[in-house]
Image 1 (spheres, rainbow, N blue to C red):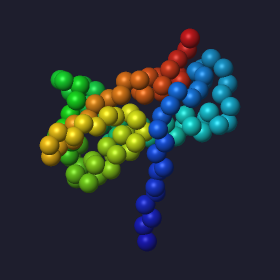
Image 2: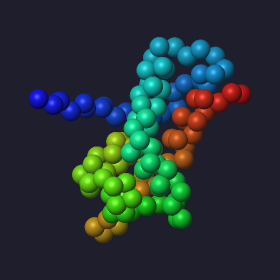
Image 3: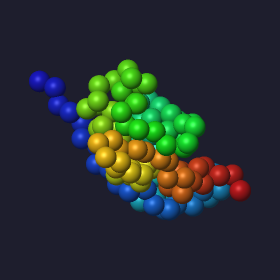
Length: 116
């Protein structure tokens, strides 16, 4: 029998000092690792990349299944994970949901790896 791994998504907040400048404590490490684990999935990483590089900085959910060669339910699951973490914002326009990168949330992860 197969068991699905449920990943509990937590909204990414500014949490930690840059890990390359000074050691972080165990709680900070757990929180930061969960945020990076969210992006460690190749499909979620591609979704972020596709949306960030879209001409208007946003993409319709309807365009992603074909771009990713994945089913709509699979794409929807990944979009939910990224939205719940705050990495994406969602705008409902009629039948379709449009997604944008929340650059402030992504900056939290970037800043955690900053050298200075």
